[in-house]
Length: 262
Length: 332
Image (cartoon, rainbow over all chains, first blue to last red):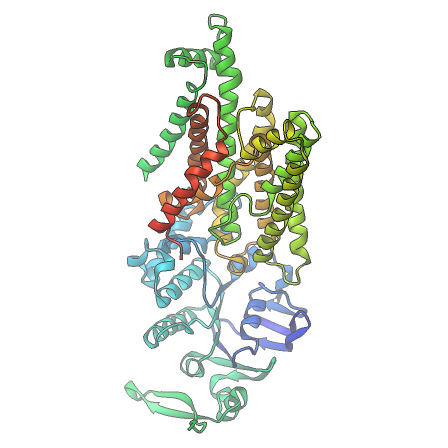
């Protein structure tokens, strides 16, 4: 589906990542893990075609992304940024309608057909009650749901999400992650960066760990999420534990086993 | 929804209609309606007095048109700049266009040029100052919205110093009052000859802005988000800035510096119809045009000699803006 080959990106002279390769399949759920500042967000922006690579190419089904018009990319790849910060008091419905932008002509505004799609995704995500509320006055979790609704109105094949759970409380984290998982099961390829290794355990089919601008490991969740890889990536001892939840389902999670201070 | 649009329409029609009667030459409504109807249907105008014809057709109608265009230009430029720079506190002069145009006009007045030359100078220097702003922002390592706004402050500050310089060297009996009066803004010198190029240089950009208005929402999401939504942000912002700059430079060149309209009207319009530019642009066109027309009527009629409209818009605009802020404008 979406792949990045031999990619190098640098802000001015400092390289964020070098010679990076990553492949994804249709309908999978990918997690990109790594500590702060490792280049996760930059990588995602390059995949979305927002930042141009210095070297290398991004391919979508073997089409070079740099050869596509930005508008065509937006019909295929949706990008949900970490925190959307518009200063204007748009309503939820207006925010979601903006997701139709790639399909609306320069001289036009969203058609009746576009607005039907907007209403559909608002209902699908369960935002009907918030439809006419101001986006900037919503809670973090609600905002994230609105942004997911907006990106769905974009009807993309690939969904890129930059740490969708990082500003949310425990309950809302699960709510958003469950929703994203559902979307990936419905056939949308999800590529998500996250601070939380446990989200990778719970939801990802495949994981890539980035460490100092290189891919430390890349593959199926089980084989990548090892104590050794995680300890290297986060530069501290990490243990993986397993608990049995409802229906005897096994849940893996990891904790730092570093000696507590004091 | 319907009522809101009706109010805006009535405001436009009402302010235009009332403006036809305000001025030193007194006319009755019946006469004016009769004259306009005959004129519009290309009938025989000879039964009307020449004085009436001149007052309405050659003086008031052109002035009303130009004032309305300037009001629309300043307020819509404010709306567009606020969206393009993600900043509710910028307005039509953010990129230095007003200060540049003021300098151009002051320079032409200093040299004692004709009024038409003053307008041409104002227009050229208005455009030039935005080009300089653009140029300065390109020299920053990381070009962004903020660097563009900062560059605008730099350019504006520089040109306003030059205006002060010209004021200090101008002949204090003759040229200095002319410069000061021009800088305060007035429509008193507007004539029929301003009509064509006002319609062209303000009307056309406004028409284009009106047609592409929904897209402005996308840009208002912020740079990266707009890119992810498929927009070529650099190109789109460039087009918006060109349209606004041409229209604003033309506005300043015919009227001088009319302050506060570009800041106050967008906020009122946003409170009335919300931030969606599909509604916001038409609302600020209607509000901006009729607001400035009413201000112009006040400027003509408050005192026996006409006072500068720029003084009125500031005297009313500044406190009103303070009131809006106190009331809360829905900003984050």
